[in-house]
Amino acid sequence: MYQEQLECMDRCSLDELQSQRLRAVVKNVYEKVDTYRNKFDELGIRPDDIRGIKDLGKLPFTVKDDLRKAYPYKMFAVPMKDIVRVHCSSGTTGQISVVGYTENDVEMWAECVARALSAAGLDDRDIVHIAYGYGLFTGGLGAHYGVEKLGAAAVPVSGGNTNRQVQILRDFGVTAIACTPSYALLVGETAKEQGVDPRELPLRVGIFGAEPWSESMRNKLENLFGIKALDIYGLSEIMGPGIGYECLEQNGLHINEDNFIIEILDTETLKPVPDGEYGEVVLTTLTKEGIPLIRYRTRDVSRIIPGDCACGRTFRRLARITGRSDDMLIIRGVNVYPSQIEDILLSIENVAPHYQIILDKKGSMDTVEVRVELEPGIDFDEIKTIQETSRKVRARISSALAISIDVKIVQPKSLARSQGKIQRVVDLRCGKE
Picture 1 (tube, rainbow, N blue to C red):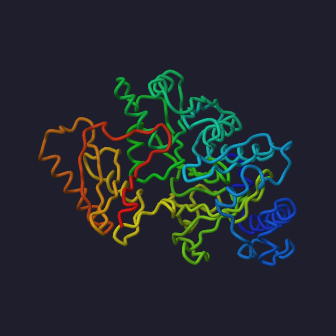
Picture 2 (picture 1 turned 180 degrees about the horizontal axis):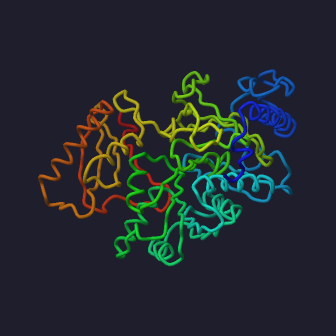
Picture 3 (picture 1 turned 30 degrees about the horizontal axis):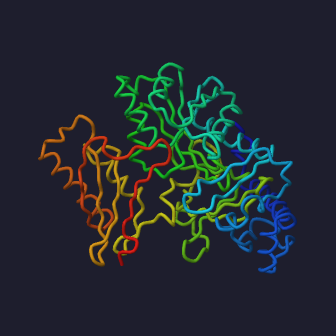
């Protein structure tokens, strides 16, 4: 274990540590960030009113729009001379959000990732292939500094040039890969096309994140490469990979609670839900200096897994992210996350892990078409196989999600592959009311 004293801290001591750090961060943002001072004043809250984590619910939320309005640096709590690195969100849903890191922030981030890698069974003898994008995206550099902090060797491949990625995996003795799960699939397929059996590579662990993925996808990746596939959690506004991580028990993401307070709130009432129930993930940073955030609404949907982990870590565990509350599809009144459809598809024989969900309207009625590829080697001209697979997909989705869909079996390799985050859903319903 990388930092056993912290990762196995008893709950009482952890609560006290969080309370102490919360008091400090509240005082800090009130004094140094106009956005927070205004929010606190509007609610009539003074920093002295917050005595510990039991008072967390008194504090205002932070939303993505706060960061957009503060673009680029108005949410920073330190002068620019203390900022050593700047990252930002992709901006795919609007104005980008800028996040600054002090030297201490980068150190804390690296320690969080090193904990994750250690929990994955890695140490200073390992070689880690990092195929997350480098640059303003937090994935590549976030993983990179954690690998170096652990003392392992980082191979900073970044995304793209998949043929070369396979060559490096084959020739460099790489024992772990870090990237999005969808890109790992593409790397595995490319290896096979080159006559390289992914299971014969020296890889033994995959650290996958930056997009929601299902348990069925885990099984696909583990079978494809012959590895342990582990989830890692982060988001650009709070910190890249390393907020939470899976250990080898593969039973939830341990949240680094000495650095972050996690809440799960009802998406409608924004009140806390009991452990085990799904809601929106809300995070408060406790140790970040550059841009500390209070009760940031991530829009990610998940739940706290009750009980202890067999690994001995006491940090609470977050279940796999189901999706984002703003990515939830409402189809004929039924709430559906793309990851639920993925989980069903990948449990069906002959279906490849490549699919796309097309939403449209006929009159006032929502329509759903799920396009899927068959596994390589399946005869696409075999009508019986096509018909049987279509029937199974329709029946399983209808049974599990209570929606009827159309299924289109498409030619192998006809659906888009991604070298980063993949877009699974095409929604054509806008403007067709």
